[in-house]
Amino acid sequence: MGVALSVQAQSNVTVWGRVGGGVEYLSGIKTGPNTTGSRVAEGSHWGTSIWGIRGSEDLGNGNQALFSLEGAFASDTGTQGGGKLFQRAAWVGLKNEKAGFLRLGQGNFINNYIWGYDPFLLEDYSASTFTNYRNGVKLANGIRYEAPSFGGLEFAAQLNLGEGLNGFRSGPADPVVQNGMAWGATIAYRQPTWEVRAIYNELNNKDGKMDNLFIASRELFLGGKARFGRALVQAAWVHYTAPDTAAGLSNRADHLWAGLTYDVTPRFHAQSAIYSMKVGKGSWTSDHDGEGRGTMLAIGAMYDLSKRTFLYANVAHVWNSANANFSVRPTAPGYGNPITGNSTRTLPGRGQTGAFAGVMHNF
Image (cartoon, rainbow, N blue to C red; front, side):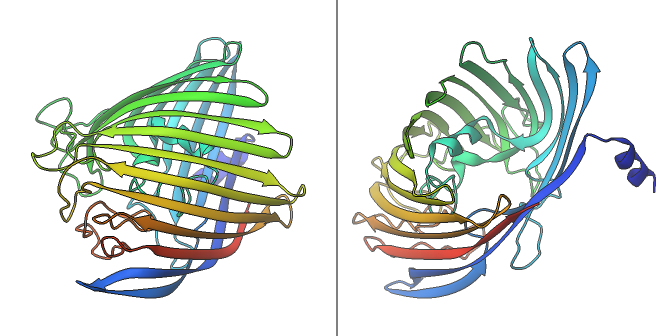
């Protein structure tokens, strides 16, 4: 009752969220040493379903207190996402019009800005496909500062403390928190019809090492986008390095993409993009991507039924070089999936096609 009364008294608190559901067809899934299969699944493949509470309080003199609580869930099963009640956000912050914004707590990492430069918004078939969601992680123990915009110039920096017992860079022996210390910074220049951004970040594993390109590594992002009437053009280059990788395994990779979103009508939006991942020299293992290249072509469409509800449909195909086994969906690195045991990767050198369609409602 006390919680309910507090919420009622706080008039600037908003309960919000989104729920998505659809059907996916995926071919070329590895089922054995030399065999593949296909599957049909139900779920929200355009983006995870979310519920959240956020609010702010005016403290006077251009000052605000803000908070956000945000959780993810699977609409097909109703299960909680990410192993945490508020995996996507659990932070409190202070904002001043001239000094900027300081945020403390669980939430998106500094590289979350990447979604704005991806025509497919880091969905299941997107710039996340080749990176195991490395380019849009949510991390605990965060301290983040965002400077006010100055003539279109923006800056932000973030430090996520590992809270490990054996060094500043290490993390706890925790089955949910799988990383150690992380930090990064971004700078952008934004204008009404175009913008460019650079991001640099480092993410350590629990042992304080950067030893896997798409789990614990360095990331350098350069991206831009521009609007030409109904058309929005987006492109980016991302460089990954993992200096603590064991000898004989790949420790660098380059990710490129370019795409177009076109507003056919105010309600109908068409999307297309091509993505390429080139992993440097090194062997493939069960949990490390090795030397190879993956190229994915994706096309899609969204139709707004209202301001809160839209339909979506996406199709993608990935081509793999001789040793590569990338899926159109983001999966853990390597030939196998030691974390969940149910990778959707295909056989080395094979292609894979996926398609999904569904509906998303925002509330």
